[in-house]
Length: 192
Image (tube, rainbow, N blue to C red):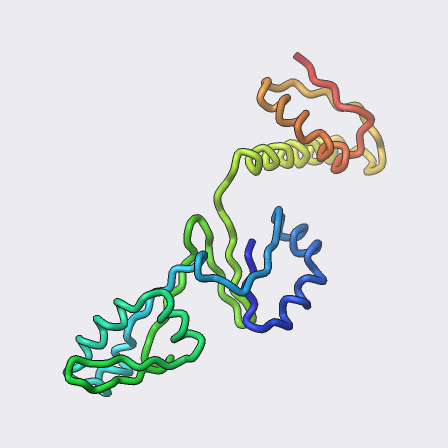
């Protein structure tokens, strides 16, 4: 997850709670960044309800110019909240935030959530390692559910016998610290 705060002070406030954020949201890593250029796709469109009466016949030309702005100009407009566009007639048109609709989307597998104090980009690409960790966590959840169904005391240590395919055996060996950390057990024995 990448967090892009709107104010520098927000970073230090959030960093204090980094472990809680990672744990509660089940996120592997959190990065705080001020640069979002590579992670966001920004699309600007004219707010025709506002600019139509103001621009009159120039609205089509201004629409084309706004849609052709490069990433640097878009970022500058968002930061300064105003942009000047030269028209073919030689006039300049000034657009403000009220005149333009801003649509932001995450790039490259990132999903965007925008709050009042920060933007949050969540990397939704599932790597093989994330799938494996998810499988082990699902296994832990299933064992905990089974313990509950058997009405076992919470602090009772048990021996766990598991029969599974070779892939799950390999994965469970790779992440063997997750099982004892999350289950109260004496040992895990794999049956063939």
